[in-house]
Length: 348
Image: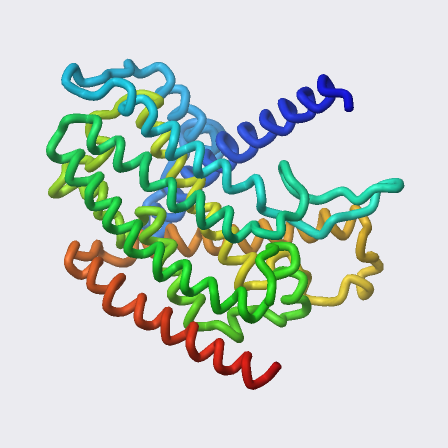
């Protein structure tokens, strides 16, 4: 085994991931958010920096890099620095197990259309494990800042994310029972030709969608960073690129949630028509490339939906947020799981 070649391959993949996901995707998300919000509010949006304002997100990133990095004197320096790294690291690590298309044949070997790893048979469990770790970044940020507003934002976040993780996990069990697999590759393959899980699990989809808004701290569930009562919440004492890392993590999580929704409920990369109708064979590179673009288009639709909801629905009160999570979504998720289990038992 040539370890030097493996190290070089790992570094190349790491550069691709950081460039495509962290910079381009997050920058596009910021640009899309500002343009869509301007469209909803009958404004123009970014239009000064670059053609159609396309370079505005990159100008914002450069500004964050050049801003002074301030750490409060009474803050816990170690955890204050680690917190944004945890949030962004978790947001990017999820992509390690996400497939983007069917594998294709190249020579005598099978190439998986994924950023890092081939098909992982416990991909869903890996994603759920990482999302549960993501709460530590925000909690550490609130506690280590030694600021009451930041601490309240961190406490809100930990309670909110833990509460909605239960409903999210239970909603996924119904999908796993229908697919009879934990592999994302197999789950998508079983949704070919409009055989989407959203038709079999509509309640699970609604629960997962609402939980995704809460998990990503997006409006109307952005209680951890509610500006009117908490100044900025858990990131009040952050500046420069540390603040930027929280910002990028939010958009990376939004893309991740949209991608998972498409893979689990809306057929993933499957084409609306048989591949043979357009002259492509399964296992070919061109079919995998077309499937990749189909997946991206579906994902962008839900990214647009996340942005649309943010500028259309007012923020919940905190008691309403917890009531919805514990007394509405959790019982519905349990009911969906019971009904799905009974139906599968009698139909098998």
